[in-house]
Amino acid sequence: MTDAKIDYAAVFQGLPGMVALLTPDLVYADANEEFLRMSGRTREQVVGRFLFDVFPDNPNDPTATGMRNLETSLRRVLSTGERDTMALQRYDVESTQCPGQWDQRYWSPVNAPVLDPDGKVVLLVHRVEEVTELIRARGDSGGSRTRVLEAELYTRARELQEVNERLRSAHAREREVALALQEAMLPTRRQGAGHQIAVRYRPAVGSLNVCGDWYDVVDLVGGNRIGVSVGDIVGHGLAAAGVMGQLRSALSATSRVAEGPAEALDVLGRYANVVDGAESATVVTTFVDFDRHTITYSSAGHPPPALVHPDGRVEFLDRATDPPLDARPDPMPRPQASTTFSRGSTLVLYTDGLIERRREDIDKGLARLADSLVHHRNTDPEALADAVLLELLPHGGATDDTALIIVRL
Image (cartoon, rainbow, N blue to C red; front, side, top):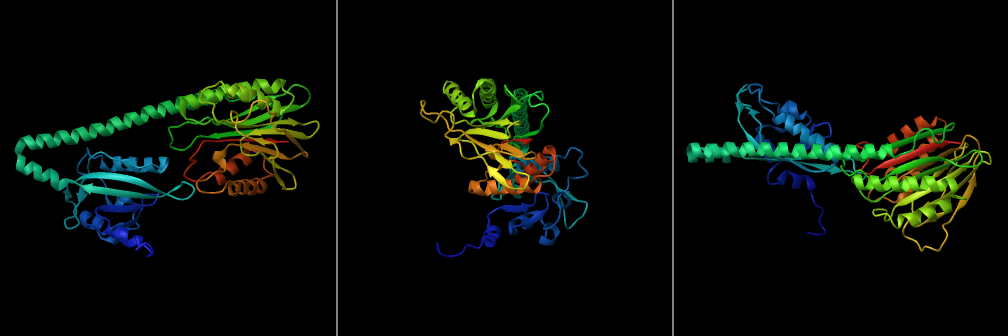
């Protein structure tokens, strides 16, 4: 049996229970035989049709909420990429033999995502268990007391769903607070004034776990110079946002007095050793000298910046890479390297959410980034940033936070 090829289509049709597959547009892609039998529909009446055209709410019941609740659950799965278990639902179904007659039905639905290698939701698994007969049987045999208990059960199920909604709302508010805190601690537009700079931050879609991705632009002392940095804190939520703020502020201050980026990261690493939550934080910083047309850089475990030359050549700045901030022996100096640029070149710094995908080598992500940068290199930084995010992030949204900063040199 281990050598035999499994017929997954046959497995799907043989699943014990009602199971259907929906596209992200909520159109039926398939339904197993049990689903068709229990719903009283043929395959032609279901597959290829919009979910709520097949199963609308009972128009005779002004209190019907089954359609709205189901759509909310399915949209949540699409946005979060996570399974959603619904409370017991009353969802009446129109009789196929007697149009206009609606049968009172009770269901227990579960909705789950099918993800592609990039983490994008490509299908929705909609599994339902009908409990109508159970409720009717208990009601017929138990008299008024049983009907009261069943009514209470249904009420409690609805209350549970409302509690879950309130919890999600509370988590969403915490996420908004963390995002607001994170945005408040990012650099102001006064830094780097006079240069063409575009910045973008995209939190993971549907995630409550706001991460510590950050960027910074600093005006350096002496000449026409700026420091450009990007970092990533391991962790989630308000705590990660707080650590991010501490490290960003420390690097911003250090860069103004350090001789170069390596010294700035060395001091930052010493500081990170005494900051709870800064473990394994990564950062790359570049010192850009517009008078000398040089970029000096150093990286602490972070993906390499990209330098796009006017002729379309992409140079990844990867000759000064060291372990993350707290993962190296203290006495050893951090590496530092320099490169030159021509007027019209573009410097791009980013966090790993832009290029990394599950079960994929990072070189493929870097190649995608290089192709996108070359293709759009003649656009202004703002348009370039939008194009890069559109082409590199999954269409369903990023599964990890992403920070991006683009400087036209």
